[in-house]
Length: 86
Image (cartoon, helix red, strand yellow):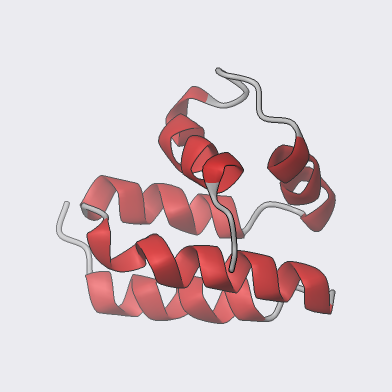
């Protein structure tokens, strides 16, 4: 399946920046901006699912990652859990 990577990236960046709470906006948007250009097509789609998760789940994930919470998103989950914003 051919994807329009630029359109998906724009949607991801927008969603990452406008979450509802300023703290999570800053955390998620800085994470997305750091990794988005290094991802392949499949990882971009995973990142899109990731940024569309609800705020509570993302907040908990940032504090407590467990392997296999969601096998399809594990690579993104791990990157997020290990992400240390400046």
